[in-house]
Length: 267
Image 1 (cartoon, rainbow, N blue to C red):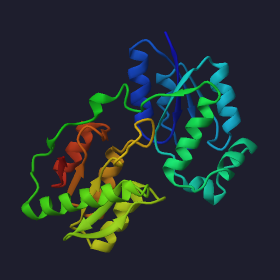
Image 2 (image 1 turned 90 degrees about the vertical axis):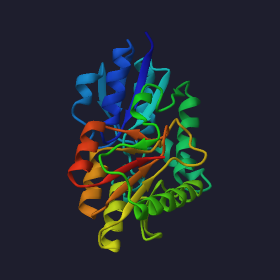
Image 3 (image 1 turned 30 degrees about the vertical axis):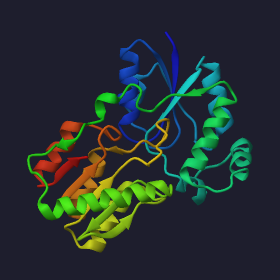
C-alpha cells in the first residue's frame, strides 16, 4: 500500500488521521514539526520523526527517503514561531520566505505546497480520511441557542467569513452584535479568551472556513482545547460551519458544552 507522509502539529488531528490511514492499510510516516506534538502519535504511525518546521530541507529529505509521495498537514503550527526567533530557519526556508509578497497564512502555505510539489511530494486534502469528523447542520448540544444568541451567532458567522476572505483568521468573538475579538497570528484559543475578557463574559464564538478554503491546509477545527477556552471566557454559544469544520473528540466537546450550558450550532 501507499506510504503517506504526515506533517504534524499540536492537537489530536494528526493522531486521528494516522489511525484512520493505517486502518485502511496505508503506511504512515510522521514528522512532528513543533514541540508538544501528541505523544500518542508514535504509537499510531509506522515511524515518527521530530524535525523543526524551520528545517525544510531535512523534512523533505526525510520524507523522500521514507518513500513518501503524498503528504498531509494537520495540527496547530502557529505562524508566530517564525517571527519570535523560537525556530531556527534553514537556508531553503529563508529563501522561500524572502520570495513572498506578504506573510499571510495562505501565501506561506501555498509557497510551502509548491516547494513540496517541486520535490515530487503531492499534498492531500486534509479531510480526505476525516470526513466523519465534519458535522452537518443542526444543534449538537442539549440546549438550543436563545433568540439573542442566534442573532449573535449569525452576525459572528458573517464577520468570521469576512476576516477569512481577507486571510486574517477564521474565528471571531462577538457580543450584542459587536465584535469583541478577531483571530490573527495568536490562534483561536487566545482569541477566544481575549474576547471573553473584553466582553466580560456572555460572549459567542464563530469559527468558519474561508470563503475559498483550500482543503489541503488550515481547515478549521474545534476540539476540547477550544471548549476549555470558551469556558474560561464565559462564552455561551459556538457556531461552526457545516461540512467544513473538523470536530475533534466530539463526545468530549459536547459533554463539556452541556456541562457548562454552552450551545453549539452547526450552520
